Structure formats: C-alpha cells, structure tokens
Length: 105
Length: 115
Image (cartoon, rainbow over all chains, first blue to last red; front, side, top):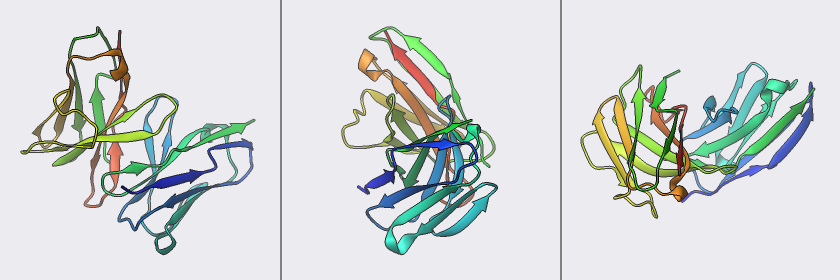
C-alpha cells in the first residue's frame, strides 16, 4: 500500500507564530486530504487537495502531485489550533502518523 | 459539508458480548462507507469497506467473522464487534465519500471499552 510520512511528529508554537507541516507519499494519488483531530476525536476536514493550492482563512495547503508531497501552512497560530493534524491519501484513505501541534499562549 | 453520525458515542461492554455501532450519512447517500480503528496515540487504520447491496471487503489482518459489517441502506452501515475482548477496546470511526469526489467525511467516532 501507499506509504504516508508526516513531519515533524511534534510541533510547539508560540501564539501568533507561523508553521509548515509536510506530508510525503510514496505513489501517485487521486485523493489527498488534511484533517484536524480535535480533543474528542472528531476529524475535521481542512482541505481536499489532490493537487494545487487552496486557502481557508489562516490555513492554506499546497500539493505537488508530481513530486508526491503536500504542505499545510498555519499562519498566526492560535491556541485553538492545537491538536493532531493528519494527512491521508487515496480513495481508501491511508493516514500518516500525524503531527501533534501545541500552541502556547 | 456532508454530515456523518455515529451511535453510540461511547460504550462499555463485558468480555464475550457483542456490540453494534451504527454509522449514518445524514444529508447524502453513500453506497460505500469505510470503517477505521484508532488506538491511543496512534493513527487511523482502515479496517473494511462497507458496500451497499454486497459484502464488505476487509483489510489484511482484520477478522471478518469478528467484525461483522452490514450496509443496510444507502444511509446506514453497521459494525458489530462479536465476542468482544479487552484488546478490541479502541476508537472506531466511520467515513463516507460525498459530493461526487473522493473527499471523505468522518463520523464523530465510537469509543469502545471491553472489561
């Protein structure tokens, strides 16, 4: 199956800082999604982005399909951004291990 | 976005009993749904694909006789954990694609504890 690697595994930010999360995948894909898992376990859809660039408020994402990676940008981070961010690819989603983000006030 | 619900949100059962978890698509129809399992501090692992009108397909290493899946309608899939044991304690989450794309929407999950 497709291998998905996320980096870094952990990220500690001061409120207001910017950050970049990375997702590498081992094969071409027709689906790539970024999720934020809240403390109750719910997966929140952030982006559906098999290719190209999208922005939603302080978050943006870019997927370079030909080079098999995607980036998630968080700007002006807030404490509510804390949690685990997952990248997942393919129709039967294969998940990366996640990046745990902690934003300190 | 599309809404997926799960019931129950939390269940505690005794070892040897069976537990049924429901996954519903509330505002769209889903001919396919997916079931995942997540252990503490770990990522999500796909268990099986639920297909309306046909048998479920299971990922390698998942016991189909232990995790029974029934896709009863275009809006409902159920996962039954049979003869549950403590090692089956986990967070079970379902998803379904919507909107004519591959984008998946997830239910809120069911936390199963087997005592």
